Length: 329
Image (cartoon, rainbow, N blue to C red; front, side, top):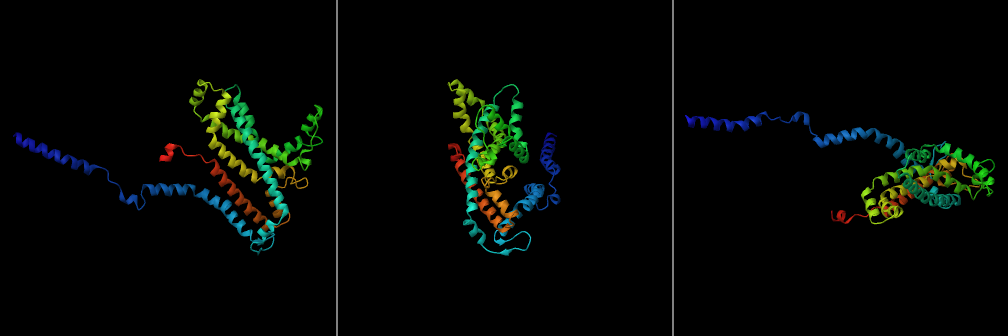
């Protein structure tokens, strides 16, 4: 009897795994199709970003290719263009007004980028303190970023007017000499730099502030325990750790400086005596005042190559060096 029970128990145990395997859910091969899970996820991702890709191609890539083709033509935007090969580029290399605009653009970039970086860093350090009403101060610094360029130009044209401006009125009341600002060939470009630095400090301060708040407080506490002052800890610990943020801002501000146009158009229109005619404004004059569209396209291509080269150089210089642990990987 016992042997019979044991045989039945053994038979039941031997059948149990078969039952479980038989009841386990089997994948539906008809639903899987030819694409696996990763393939379906990739297809879904491409479908989701496809509208953006189409817009980028239409409004970004196509104009670039069309401008490149236009740079080899003589075109006035009204009649069919004629193929002239490299003549636009040969004319560009011998155009003194173009090289004057390049010199002004470089001067503007050299004045604008370091000033904005330093003032943005100092503003971020001030806004990183825990004081009452700090949100109001941060909002006040950031407001110029969301102000339109035309509105900024109108405000500064009124403030810096040589006859009726608020700045000259204040200077004359305290007995200081007045300035001509946008009306002077030697002061117009620095005035444009002053206006654009005011408009960009908020953006730079916002980026630096995010970087400062990402630095662990343990490092600052350890520095204070070791006797380091707050100013010393800022320059020796926080500023070096902000190197990636500084590199990003350096590239971003340089690209925007080389493309300066809106501020000049809103205030000086390239004057006086072409003192603020930078490269993009010279391009605008050639394309839409003199209708030399092919020549303007050649200027745009040269500017594109210059911006790409400067950006690549800056990224190479500011690229963070790998740590020993990362190097061993």
